[in-house]
Each structure stands twice: as structure tokens, then as C-alpha cells.
Image (cartoon, rainbow, N blue to C red; front, side):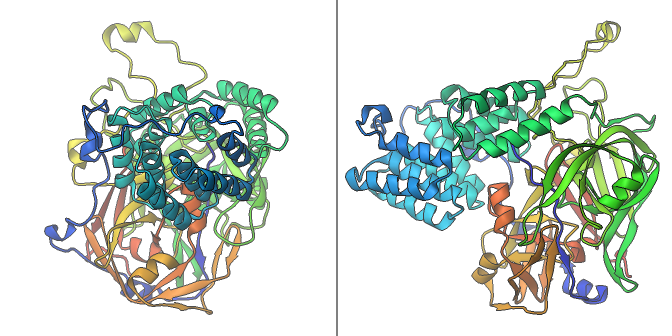
Length: 591
């Protein structure tokens, strides 16, 4: 499973913080005004056991005959072209099949999936809706769920897949889809069960295999990738990524990268540092992080992952290079050269961690900073970002009901490939301890919402990205990224055009790790409603967010940025997919 490297957004138009604060007026609407916001979690259909139903609205006729029964095997040819990355040829092959067999559900489903791989979501939706009019069958319904998921309509996607399975169809990609939903809502144990079922039904599906690899230990992944590379053809489009992933796994396999907590304390409070554009303009907040004894100021960014530093800071800290890699973010100039390195010690407040991987970009700065630290590195803690008091607090998470001891705490700065991965070695049980106290369960666990967190907002988590259902005016909710590294609230150009007038803005410059964004727009007045808050924007920058959406695999329609978030205290439970926003006008910081 691939991970998106850290990213930042930097707006170089010098707006005073006072103006930004005025644009970010926050109010607390009445409780009944939140009834239009969807709740993240199981739908009513999905909360019940998935089992064959006695009857179904889905047609019971069998799908397209197996590809091998067709003399020319056009379905097999089309899938082979997809595997090679020749999407245009695959589209032609599927269209040829539909010309010859216009009622083929497998052809409609396959064609829609190719358009999704080309990131042509509109064409994928048109294809699948046409297929439903021609042949409303379960293969097309599964594909419809995949299109819904990419559009950010996750509850609708989940319902399609649940209906197919409850209709008695053992559809591998329906189980794959449900695994993606469960993973996004922090139901990791059930996500793993779903992906294992999908792999059992169709181990040769490349998308299923990719997700299934994330459930294996590092040693098992190395062995599996070696076998896949030996069996793959030279023109397989996935081969370069597989080779790079294998090389990185091997390069890091021989070193301890546990990044385990070694200090005696398990919580801390540390001041946040003001990061300035100039003496009068606040860029964001950072942390003073000790890397091998060297003090480095890193921008705290909920939109990034792990620890990223520039080459100069890495040399100053004396980190050890392990393997080369590429690092990308927002911008039109592509990825940059970088490498993975190992820091023997990382100190944050009163906490010290040992043997921690970090990433280094081969440039003199990271978008004007020494580097970034993603808030997700603290996923073993309850993360309390208190902007009004300029403090970061890290506390222990509530124990799950089945936990008998405190779980091991680490800093999440390595390649964990999601939360479904197995350990290479299970620790030997302490026989003396287990006589009186049974060990904690091993492996991934489903989310746990403790009584004290009932009021928190449930969110979708895609890797390090935290996506929050957000209403724009009176339109249905869309997914916005919680991003303290973005100076202000931003919106995708497509979402902006649905609710207001959009104008080209030649004075605004958006810059990220991958350079500048060439086409930036301004959206007129928009009211955002998320969590228990409403915020009115007189104007918002708008640009193409498709690179973020394509990587997440679902539609990201905007970002909630620093200009507004700095007025709040934000508590994040990464383990259980929960966020709490507190706004107190009396505590808001005035700079």
C-alpha cells in the first residue's frame, strides 16, 4: 500500500492575521442545525451482520460468463492492458466488447474502473449509470459503489456493497470496498477480515492484492514482492513501484526502527513556537524537536505525515542515510529527490524516542521551513493542540475494554503501511505477568469510543489525512481536510462552482513541496459547517485538489486551514478517528 509523502500549502500573498481572523468568524449554531451533517460510521445496513438475504432487489441472473469461455477472451485482454497501464487501449477493448455484447455487466463494470484509474470520475459515473439502465446487475452495482467512494459518497458506496453481499453474491470487490470503508472509519479488525475475504475469493485482482499486502509482516511482504516481480512481465505498469517498494523494505529491514518511547513519563505538555512569514505575519505553529541532540524547529502540520527535514538540518543532526526515495506534495513540478534516514534519538517535550526513521528532502528548505512534523506521529496519544494558549499536550488514550495493561507507545514516523500490518515477531509472553494479568489482544482492533469522547466528531482517516464531513451553505456535506499547514481555508474549484461565483486570482500564489500551483481562483462568500461549528468566509482561495483526491482515493473538496484553526483548541484521537473542536472567544489568540 503506497503512502503519500508529506505535503504543505503556503500562501505567499501577505495577509495580516487580523484580516484572516475577521474572515474566520466562528459561531455555535443551534443543535438542530447539524441534522444535515452525515455521521461517520456504519450505516444501518452495514451495522447488521453481512449474510445472504432471502430476497433482494438485485437481479439473480448470473453475470457475464467467465472470460475463458469466450473464444477471443476480450475481458481477459482488457484486464491485461490495464495491468500494463495502457488504459486507452483497455477502454477501446471494453467499448468493442460492449458493441458486440451491449448487455455485458462485466464490460460496463470494467470500463468504469478504467476511467477511475485514469482519474476521469465523471466518465466513470456516466458509464456505470448507463450500465445500470441497460443491465441492473450486481457487477455493475459493485462498480457503482466504487464510483460513489471516489466521489466522496462513502455511506452510499457502503450501502451498495452491503446490498450485493447480503443478496448472496460472493463479490470479491464488494469485500474490498467494505475493507476500504472500515479502514477509513478506524474499524481495523473488521477491515482486515474483509480484505482477507476478498483475497480468498480473488487473489489475482491487483487492487485486492495491493491492499492485502498491507496486512502482511515486513518479511512476508518482501517474500511476496520478490515472487511477484519474478512472475511479472517486463511491461507490467506496476513493476517499477513494486521494485522501489521492495528495495526500500530490504534497505530498512536490517535496522531497528521501532521509535519506541524510552522516557519514564508517558505524557507531556510543550510550548508551540510561532513560525513567521515576516515580523508581522504568522505562518503557523511549530515544535522544538531534538534530533540526535540538535534542536530543530518543525512546523506542526495535520496535513503531513512523519518527520521531514531539509538537507542542512539533516546534516546538522547527523542522521544516518538508509535508502533513497522521492518526496512530493502540492505543486505542478513533480516530486523531489530525498532519502530515508535513521535518527538514534528524538526528543519532544519530556518524551524521548529511540531509533526513529525520518525523511530528508534534497533542498535547502521545506517550503521556507527547516522541516515538518505531521500530527499523526503522535497517533498513540490523545493529541491536544491548544492554539489559544500556544501549547501542545500529549496524553494517554482511554483503555479499550479488552486491554489489561498499557499498550506500547511509539512515535509513528516509519512505514507502517496502514494499521493492518502484522509484526515479524510476536513478543514472548511474560509468564509471571500472565499468571495474574492476561496480555492485551494482538493485531488490529476496531475503534473504541469511550464515554468521555461521546461528544467528539467522527471523521474519516485516509493514512495521515483527516477528512471531516463539511456542509457548504445548504449543499450536501463534502469532505474537507484538517490542515494546520495550510494558511487559510481553501476549496476545490469544482466544489466552489456549485455554491458561488469563482474568479481567476492572478495575485495569489500557492506553493508546496512540488512547486507552485499555476491556476488559482477566488471563491466568493461561503459558509462552512463542520463538527459543532459554523464559519463564514468572505472569500476563499480555490484550486484543483485532484492530486490530493486521487491519492486518497476519495473526493477532497477543501481544506480547513490555519487562519480559522488557530482560534480553536483541537483534540485528535487518531486511533479511533475522533476530533473535538472547542471555540471560546475569550481565549482566542490575538497576534
